[in-house]
Amino acid sequence: MGALDIVLLPCLADNYSVLLHEPDTGETAVIDAPCASAIKAALAERSWRLNHLFITHHHTDHTGGINELKAHYGASVTGPETEVDRIAGLTRVVKAGSKLEFAGHPIEVLETPGHTLGHLTYYFPDDGVAFTGDTLFSLGCGKVFEGDPQMMWESVSKIAALPGDTKIYCGHEYTLNNARFAVSVEPENDALKKRVAEVEGLRAAGRPTLPTTIDVERATNPFLRPQSRAIQARLGMLGAPDWEVFARLRQLKNKA
Image (cartoon, rainbow, N blue to C red; front, side, top):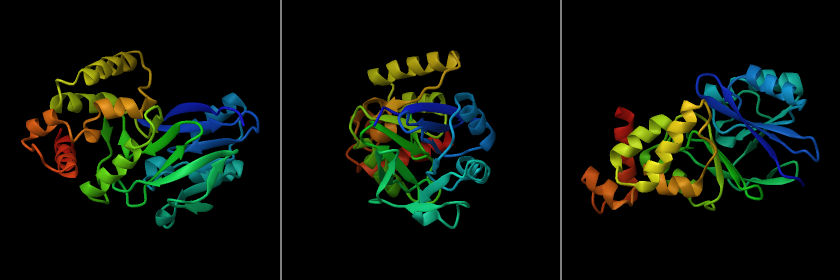
């Protein structure tokens, strides 16, 4: 089993899909399918044929390309069991504890609801990568559309508990916008200052800010840092439960 080739692929206005290719077997997978055209072009450029799609949640900017890709390549489509009625084209449904692999690489399925009730994160432990969709972003987290803040806090906490060197690929290029909010709630954080400078440089050069890592996010992402005394003090919530601080942060970010 060789190392996976991983390609971060911009789609639509600010979405990302991710291509995974196993060079020993030739198998190729895609994490989320915002649109078919960009994915087909990237596959053709590399002479890869799509075998599998892994879908994190039902929103159309993550599922819009499923039917065309499935029809063109005959690919299997894996997605959340609880959203089977909201994602057309699924051929396999999974939940936490489901046995799942790609080309011999094991996949752990994490249920990470909040953004949607069935949202999944796909963690490849042997490869040290996780695909978090719209649950955890670099320096941010997804909006809570279908769950509640406590549910979302529990979901991001599951991801934050992964090994620190785990590489995180999320579904959107939101990092620079998230950075502005992060600095507003924890301006004294030196690790955050360093990350913001890095993000600004990457975006100025037209480069993606992903992947990030769990260690970087634990040190800089305010949504993983509700225990920070500086953040709590700034919000007037010293000693409050983590999920309540998280909820207040999400409320403030919604208005930012």
